[in-house]
Length: 193
Image (tube, rainbow, N blue to C red; front, side, top):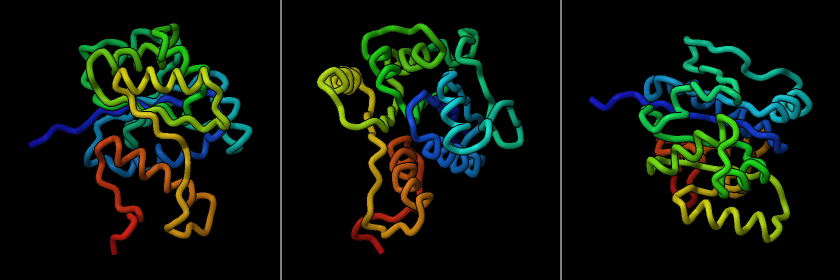
């Protein structure tokens, strides 16, 4: 029997909190596959979440929902070490500043340290940038991250499923994130009935 997975979701200070909210909602529904979703916010991410979504987001751990919230300054969190059993980290949305620090080996907070751990341990790191357009520094940082084994998955929604609401449009990205994280999703797939 395969053991349940431990996932890290980091939310950074880029617009697009709705992607993180929808991702967390879907992960919570996967309790049969997941033992823990470790959640970390940057300070700016909390502010943007409140502006865009009107609430504080997850602030405390809730064992019933598998979510455990960690402070971004807490280097004693288990996933700050390669000896932990967290197999996937998703940074959603991923600010260009955070991506630049990770790409250049600057691990000055829990999110950047955990991302560094994921890459050094050859585990799955998925970064979901929402900003546009990209400048050459952004592109070079994404190139370095890709070469180091990270997956860059821009928050670029698809329209072929004919989404009727913003939430449905957001889920086109969230389902791709979950696919890349190795979960079975039941979202729309091109050419499949």
